[in-house]
Image (tube, rainbow, N blue to C red; front, top):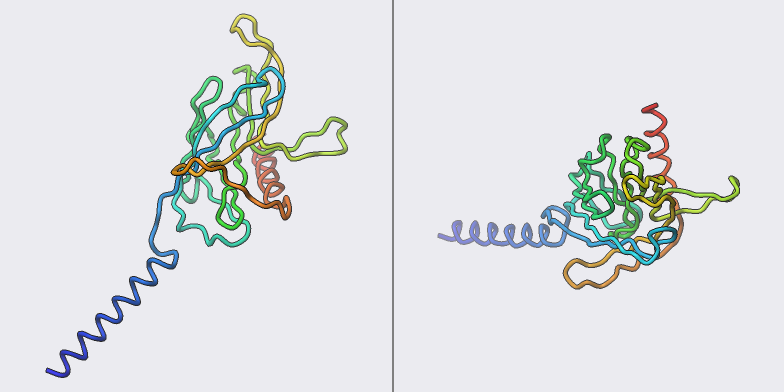
Length: 200
């Protein structure tokens, strides 16, 4: 009888420890959704806003420092309601859609819209890029777009850029991320440039 009681106590203790580990660690998978908005647009789209969301399994994150989740490796889902869209991760023929995080909070999106069909499709856009007006000094850009002049399609030519803001999908609160460095943005763009050059 004593042996059975000790066995039950041991099993119960092990179960409690296991449940505690699962709830406190990274074993239990959780699907997380973040909404985002592109705003503060310049150029022909000035004054407009465009919305989307990202969805992913957060068991891939340690929530420490810089991390990435991609559509090719971690099943990232992406949706963006923009001109000629909506767009999702399947619109990227190279399956390279990516979200970068800092301490578990979303920081940047990497996605190219109509990048491989422009100028046959007379408009294109990009999340995460670098731009320069003098060819020497470059700055990181959350979102940029370019429209060709196509009066036959009712398209006014021009381009511009905008900011990306993430929101908690449950509360609607904007997500603030500190800016200790731009390393992850540089890595994301470098990856994009390499892939773009490789395909040519």
